[in-house]
Length: 225
Image 1 (cartoon, rainbow, N blue to C red):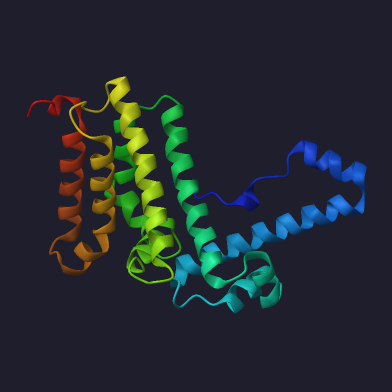
Image 2 (cartoon, one colour):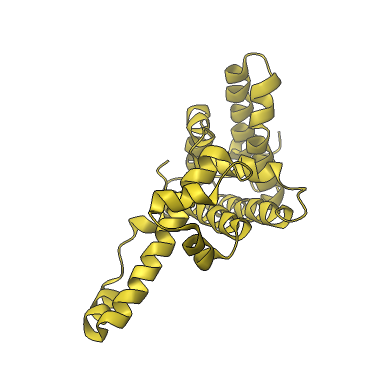
């Protein structure tokens, strides 16, 4: 699943027209917006590679080509920047899932592709969004970052619950389960992946079987089983 960053999105045509009409003042605002997007993209890379604790604002600034004070001017603090990164990453993943569903793919098919063990391996490797979410989960009890970590997982679970509801309405997902419970079950399945990788023999086989069990339990033919 491809990643999405704000820097991939060109300025709207209206904004470009406004920049031409208003002269330097609007162009300065556009440069500031682009700088903020660049900082966010660089921070996403750094935190996805190192995690929050080891991530350095100096490394983020270096990747963008600005000074550390510029990073703080745009986001206020390292923790606020991390929160923006998590929100941005969660929104990117949710948007891609929703786009696949809106394109007419059955919800169970969308979830099958997302939960595929090979995709999950890529999703959770360093540098990917899944690594960010796992890092956030490890900070859930941190007094400062805990609320941020919980929020991003609640956001993702809420989006998964909406997908389950959509699938139930279309007949793709069994109707006798709670969408919220199903969503948190899937989030827990993802959150436990690192633990299983560390302690479970034949990890790949177990992951494939767990995924199959999860998907079978959502399928309409499982109704009444």
